Amino acid sequence: MGHIQSILMLRFEEYLSDFTNTVNLLDFIINLLVATLLSLLVRYFYIRYGKAFSNRERFSDIFVPMALATLLIITVVQASIALSLGLVGALSIVRFRAAIKEPEELTYIFLVIGIGLTCGANKPILAIAAILLILLLIFIIQSLDKSKIIHSRGKILVNLVSKSLSIDDMASIVNSHFDMVELKRYQDDSKGLNATFLVIGASLEAVSALNAEARKKDEDAVIHIMDQTEMVI
Image (tube, rainbow, N blue to C red):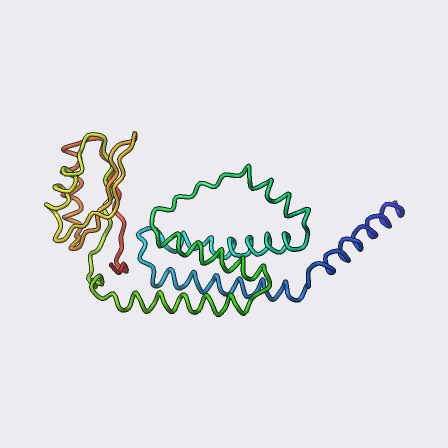
């Protein structure tokens, strides 16, 4: 038993020595902290100022783990050529399928990956400067784009799914019950027609009437109502 313990201790010391020779532990911890703080900042900015129609809080939950995972991969790749070659082989058989439906979501994903890449390359100052500048530019651009800002109450997303209704039928149904209607998403596949409308002037009576009319024209129609009171469009 004592012989096994001595072998394990020797292996651990060899591993620790190899790790400290290739990766500076203090720098690694600093990079982890910087990546965490920056990804949290991007998450807050995306929730507060993003314009995507998905659930921004839920989507942004992946920002911190994604940044740290990217940092870890880059750190390992830099520390070992053998591991970097193994990583290339592993990624060649992995296929990622993500439901990215809006360019804004992809932009923030790239920001988070950029944080991980830069911090993994041991450039935390560059990561801080770049992210702050990019977020500032996004804020300025959105602030100047006053033509697309509408502040009002009663904003909801109406999602209709039907195999028999056309897009014109859906638009007609929604238009007959709300003050302002704008088509935001449209998808036609084997499951049927899927359309999402942003409407303003929503009320419980209007939603009930919409549901009744849609069911009258298609009993199998699926209707989803999502509250978007804080949405800025």
